[in-house]
Image (tube, helix red, strand yellow):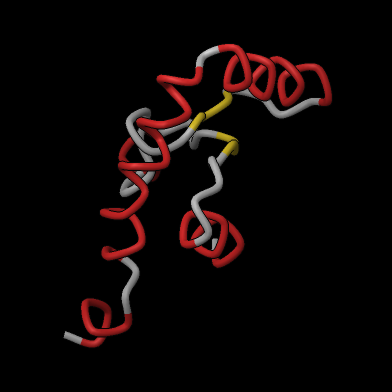
Length: 79
């Protein structure tokens, strides 16, 4: 979604629901997002806590979001 891309552009982690068919998750993956099987207040809180406690993971997700942002760059979409 465009909301996820804007979050990535601003260096924020992406937490969202994974598609049941994993091929629909692309370009979102575990190296640039936290993909939840089911979304609920407790699963979101758990994901946020995980990121707050694991700064290495948070840093990695932020770093890998550059490729995600590039994937959705208009120059790549229009090509």
